[in-house]
Image 1 (cartoon, rainbow, N blue to C red):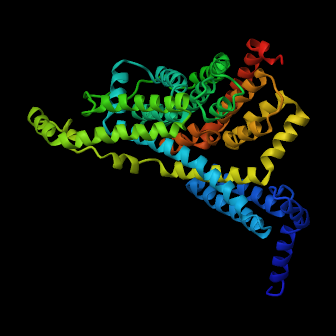
Image 2 (cartoon, rainbow, N blue to C red):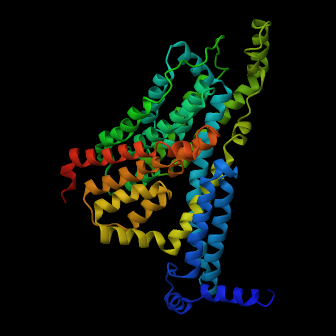
Length: 479
């Protein structure tokens, strides 16, 4: 065996270097290397596939989803760095990976602020108070299924779909935490509704932002997708609603009030969203800048709560000497505790996914796929396939590849790819930021296979939304 291993290793490295002569010619001209038919390209594809299989198996093997994609990202870019350095192009790969890290940093900071606000509202008992109000309103679980879906659909165009999904999921967990079936179905409904709602707004999803910034569709043009987006959510929601338990939530015996400052935190969160939208819409700044500015709002308010909690706590104790219900108000508000409670596994997962897919795009696979689709299949088939791909691969690099190709398409076709890229991720739980975020927030109740069970009816809504788009926006398909 000792004599066999070295030749096998030599053969492997020789296989990786087969197309070296062709790459050397490209390197001489200073262009990116085409690694799509290189051993490193094939190896990167294999690593990514294995990593995603491990992500989808999280429910069974109990391996956190961030671990395989973090390792895969390092291996993929390590191989890319090796081949580029060997051809005297280390700066090219450095610029490329820094670009991917910048994309992740913007997403990371945006999500960190959103998660911090949600954790702060949870600590101030905002969702628990809402749960009690809804329970006392006499709503059944089926009505709550529709209420949370409707709110997700109409909030996500203003906020982003992930923030909306996290917010509605927190409400669902507060209401039906004792009914795992309801939580699972409600989370599926929320993911579909949030993704559909974000598809008809310029700032409802990152992909719509990209299309808007590119100038392909003007601000008001996106609203032609309102009806198709609504159909995309309503079709599966209607079918699923018949399987939702028509039971009443667990009765709450006591009244639960929000802690001091709960309403202000909600107002500050809305103000933060408005700031993020305004920064992007009027100042051409990344939405992340507005979110980080909004984090400062919460920090200053937290400082106020810290300075006044002792005085407030004494009055609370005097008024409630025989109960512990309000004693939480005597604990100083600490914003850094809420930052620490962010779903770090989800944030690290996004890092791995963005770097993995960015590496595959840098190798040339995304551009190759886009060129093959739009040249050989036609715009309609390609745009529908983009949505299906976005359920497996993140929709951001897929849309980026389409925008880089800039195929000659009508406004109707550009709206079609915007719709499919936005709602196609609903087909799988890992296909969108909303789905991934909810898998972390409702761990054990909303899972990959729990979502997969409803993929056929979600696909029916996907097909129906495309049909409605062609029906009501036919005028936009004429170039």
